[in-house]
Length: 287
Image (cartoon, rainbow, N blue to C red; front, side, top):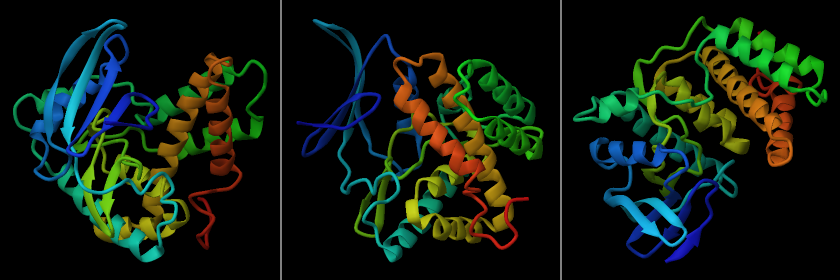
């Protein structure tokens, strides 16, 4: 089996199977995925073949073995994907995610989805305001410009009072977690962050990581869900603000080991606030 790139696991890909391995002492999100996959809508993800724990010389590991599904990931930003293919993939992805949102879990899947998960996403206006305050307090060296912190506060003040936990969401469905063969989606992978949430929790990831195809993907989502483009943009903006604030605050807590993450999230915050990334292609601009 050949090793595949992964930021959180050891992943090995063979002709018929894919294996994910993680130290048992790290997070338990792989257990969450293992509990959910057998109950997901048919054809949505790669079938689970085996899972468990294994004692190695270096310590205990947790593993999951999946059947290999045809296709490859379009990748973050969909590099090299032409406009027509991106449009078709987005339409199929929205259809599959809509099926997930309408899925009724069986067995212990519903209990698993409801288990607490520190996902870093949007929870409430008060929580986002508090996250901005925590980020400012953590930024002892003044890395984050004051106007960016003010911009975060402004987004939080426009946010809904709270998010609703009403549907089953993947919550990490960027294009690195999809498989596609030509213009057709073949699978959605990595259900470690799946939980109860709002459809916008998934629409954000789908649009945000579409690279130059973002506007086309936003249009696909808006049409398929009969959501006004302005509402969809506002939903995505507040979710990006929540993730960036959470990640940047966490990165500043460990400046020696997460400097690259801090720099990346700071660039993202600049794009969100200064670049008005969710509104710059609209006539009216950000509200």
